Length: 473
Image (cartoon, rainbow, N blue to C red; front, top):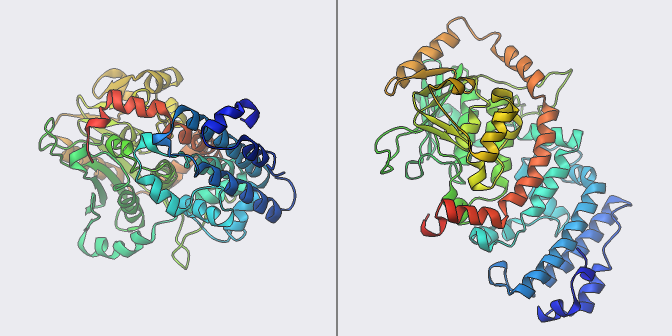
């Protein structure tokens, strides 16, 4: 969008002199040339645009004319970011990571880019302010994060490096591992890790929200996955939901209800949540962790000689009652799924209005393209015990039989040793989802999910289907 698309009087009614905005828009920099000069030029342009936006009311209190003016300015800034990143994403990544000698997680890289090129993406302080706003009132600054991540992940070398950095074990996992090894258990707030024989049980406990995932559970969940993968006494990881205290399911276990829509609506879940989750613990379950280096930081998981260099283990999902949304996504990355008869498995993507993680990439491999489209676009469900659910569930047990089934499955998986387990997982993955395929998917996902996360349609869906206005956090 340019100022030519918007009558001058609209800008003036919004309190912005059209000549001033036109002068700013005409100063859009050429992104080509030496990286330092291009970075300084786009930063100056974006900073001027942000100054114009600060002269208008916030998104939640704009008049129609003010919203049009904001949209015009945002559109020009988006174009400038897109153009700059198209030419300079690789050099920016190298500048922030010191020539790819530093392993930065996606949030660390994004905030590093904010410091290196002011205005390109929001700073931590700007995100703290944005987090205080409910979803309908957000300024939309996270779109820039999705754009940056998309451009970097689309680059083979930088994208592999970033994906590899996300497979490093968290420092917190190294700090808590001695406790797990000494006592056989570790409490991580909403997540509990317990070693039972040769199994490491990861139990998500968010009882008020039916074991939904959110900004509170994400870090502890990844830490728990790391600990299970790091503990040499654990051979198989088991994911299970804790007992909930919901009125409809008092005192029973449920596997998980997906993303916490209440905290999402109230603005507590950032866009980066999606990237941290799917590039982080979900991909660690699927691919393993980068082997720790001498400094404990870990090395990238880029293919070397055609082989992903990770430490991985077999995983079992113990599904009780239901696996909704993000919980259902986990079924695509584990090696064995046990479900109680009648358990519901579905992705409510249509009613929520967001992309269901990497299910668009992975679900068709299990159920076929047509059924996957029905699930993602039209809300198709599967019920454990019914014939078509056998494509997602390996083993069906009666309610009350999960403990015995998990014990038996772990014994069956470990009784003859696990020498070839990692090798078989790697070769299956090489044909189904090599690292570059996943990287390219996540590049598209980053751009599209940022738009979905900030879409009025998501707000409307949450208010209509979830009655989000009436719920408190």
